[in-house]
Length: 449
Image 1 (cartoon, rainbow, N blue to C red):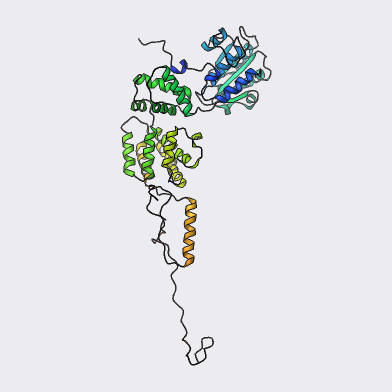
Image 2 (cartoon, rainbow, N blue to C red):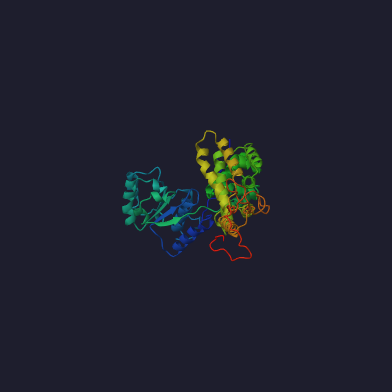
């Protein structure tokens, strides 16, 4: 039989102090300062997506308030109160699942409970997870207690959907917004875990797991557990990609490179190579859309690291790839991807739709930048005004200075019906009058003498 005492990594390395919470420094600092100054509210609301530390912070706050050496921003995690809260066995800290206790009767029972003083602690603390799941009547029943709370009671609410909570409840809580955790911070936390567990994983592999987690530290730990269960301590990148369904960012870079240079065959070859491993077409399409969005950000932003969930090396590769590509071209390619999304999602044959979309991307005509078009128009006007008969398209080949098919310097698009612009042809000359004889007076009004 397996070891039933095994503790999953997400629980084994769950933060026990505010300083250990990953990626939520603004919350940790504010709560710590409030506790140290004695400004303890009667109701807190923690909001944010899954796995970013809301429930963990609620438990740490409960320990900070009820620690025998507190209230303190740094609970000892050794006293009876701290240990019981960590184990979930404290008689004065109640964790309630809002999804399964949604009725007004549940809240009425809670209201009766909070009237009594805590048994062994400083505060009676009520933690309600997914509080947005409470019914309207339940919220109304809770409102009275929040308006006039007993001095010994502290409510801590957690939710992933703050917009579903009534304003009357929101206005009576101190709200703390938990952000999605940056890729680099998840990577560093995973690196510390694998070092303690004596697991050999490369930085590139940890980055893949961190990206798959999409800002959730708990998800990252779960994915790490899943990967280790599959392959043990020796895990290859190929195995990691297969077991977690992760798209390697290098494949996306190769693909966008082939698209931007108009290499249709190479584009399809890359797609065929991906089909040899386990991958989901719809998931890949989402990754492709995000990748082209990142290319746009890399092109336009002065600080792309704030907007793109990528390592410094990946950002550099993105910026290099779009250095000689116009924003208008990137925006056009992104639009093609967006337009095909619904077909991919609904189609019974998403692979075929994906192939045709990639062909459209690789064969799309480059789009000139607006300032380039304005200069072209000005040059044309100058040529027409000067009366020159014809002009040749400007620039070199499609790549423009060797930059590839989607470079910013490209030939002008010839007008329909002709290969170049021409000035107006002169019309027939009007009839000319005869020259006056050299030995007579000049004719008047064209009359011949």
